[in-house]
Image (spheres, rainbow, N blue to C red):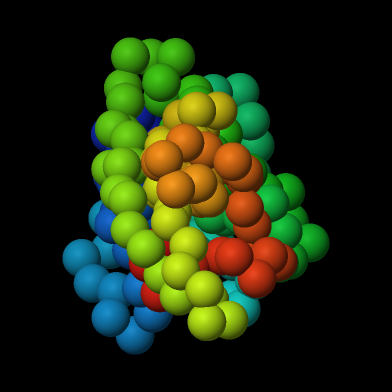
Length: 152
């Protein structure tokens, strides 16, 4: 068993934020040794450690970007890791706000992508806007026909 240092946790979080939207074939500059960097269809980044790791009182062998972390070993999410680092005074910024229009089924819709208020790391929230630019629907997920796949 080994303890994940604050410096290693910060490096992992920064690396994950930088790479979670890219294909594993383009990943480089892995921040720490002693683990395997993986990608699954339903989880863009999973880190599997060679031994059990301890950080902020939690013991785990895997860290995943999403909640569904493949494997039987104990696991935490990057959200948990970033939350614990935030308690130590370390922040990872926020998602930049963007507005744009997109045509869906022959009709033009206006969107706002902004920082999800409840996230402790850069995390987008999709909002649908009316003609005046006011939010008429927020929290649009990838299950919605209004989810702008090409713009996130």
